[in-house]
Length: 336
Image (tube, rainbow, N blue to C red; front, side, top):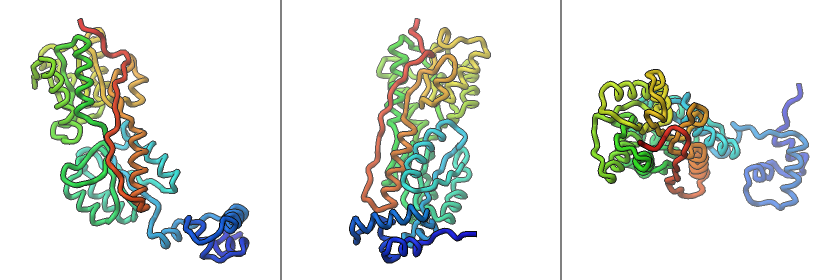
């Protein structure tokens, strides 16, 4: 069996030292353009593949990043991950994905796994950054970027939309369509990152339009499809009459629509529904879901780019509030 070419073979073929080859491969200074072209030509001719472990010994990096998701099976997570992986792969990094489960049941376990894997950085998504998580990441000594969440205690770069403003826009849209009796399917009741801000946006839009807020018209889920069904069932059984529903996630909106259909309630003829996220499934269902678009794949790209900049010591990065927009489809109608 033929042994794969080594860096020494490249150096010999190019007529330079091993140190020069290493400098060229790591984009360091100290050689002419002619020398660089000779080295790259030798690399291509020999089919030399730099060894990731050897690179790690030189730059003390493993070229891996860890990503923590509360639910890797959700469309929300897959859209974010697409963006994260796009940038990571372009920049020579591998991605380790961890499913922390609802309420962060396995977060500490996976932070320990990522520490053992010696990842170079972490993307932390969609969950409140508890103090124990922060301390564990701090002890690892690696940078972290937050996505669709932020820390109110620590200065950590984040990428997210303005959840309160986006929820306000969704509710105000229903009001401008003539709806006054508007229910809400909220996220986790104690969630300070998305659940509470989206409820506040809904409530503020009602109040600014002279509509009283009624706690009885709010039911809570966990952003997943089944919880939307349960919340809609509760609203139909217990809430005062309503003509429209704002759901704090597309999956909950779709779950609510499914339950309504089973009860013979037509969308949008009988009840209008607006969601939040603009997942691909929002375009596929019938009728297509009117929703708030947050650019999840672009958010993933931004987060990955920010993290790798921190890993490579390219300087400070700034947090980003990205733009949302309302996407009109077919689940909201003028009322009456």
